[in-house]
Image (cartoon, rainbow, N blue to C red; front, side, top):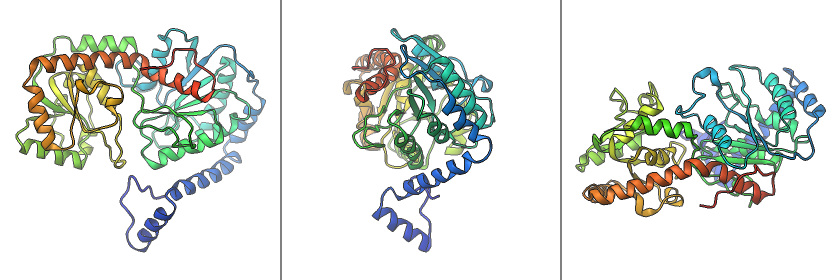
Length: 414
């Protein structure tokens, strides 16, 4: 299927017809996708042992009303990949640990899927797990199945099977709903049951799935106390080696902008945490150093540049880099205009609309050492607060707005 946000338009007659259809019915591609998914679910139920998933869900003894909140976390990767631990940029480890550290919460348990495990098998295991744990909430990454790297997606089958019986809430984490078929998956789940809540890291999703229905997003990533302490220890004594850095994937438009910045006289260190000179998107994605090394690269510069868009299209995103910049003790220049300012004071960072404005603002910020230090420290203090409270607090706020079961913690109020 053609995804208008991530591929170039088809050529010839097919391309013209596709553009016309998309103009007349903007969500036509998502409607077709949803129809195909219904067909896939019917076929899946008849083969591969998935009939036993529906049977297990129908026979499960879920409590009608749980007395205490119990959150089950199903991470996309488990301990086998070596990233289930602090300071490894595993959002679901951090979310699980942070909830354990949050006053008021009762219980959180983790459920792991083996790499390559057949979905009908882990579906049945998870149904039993939810029943035995008396789970009230399930947090997972719903862009793809856990334990898979091939993009397989069967969450719609599991959710269809358990929604008639399980009264709990599915908290569906996503990294970026600005991709149309990523959003389409969330729409499918949300229309199966009002007990689905989208948790998007990058963009606001209120009303995007079902009209007027609140969702969660954009939400700053959570970090456990162990991770915050390791970051502080790892970065202790790091001196500033650069004026400005850029960290991230070098999409074509970013390469062009960095080159224009350099041509205007700004010295920009690109990915200083790496030991190579990667100059394009593929190279910057491969052979990545550790997350702590990445944080050290941020900490080695007085300021850094954040680009708020990906290759998904013209959407401003709340990049995880924003909170990471704060924790690294670095000043932020960002091209977003309606993301960072939702969470940080506009006096503590700088936004820019283009290389000329960035040039002027960088000269101004870097020339006033006292003000740069004040702003950087204030931004860092706020980043620490958000890392501890924003993720789960925002989820709790949305649960209360929707009249769904509470996690039992304080909602985020700013």
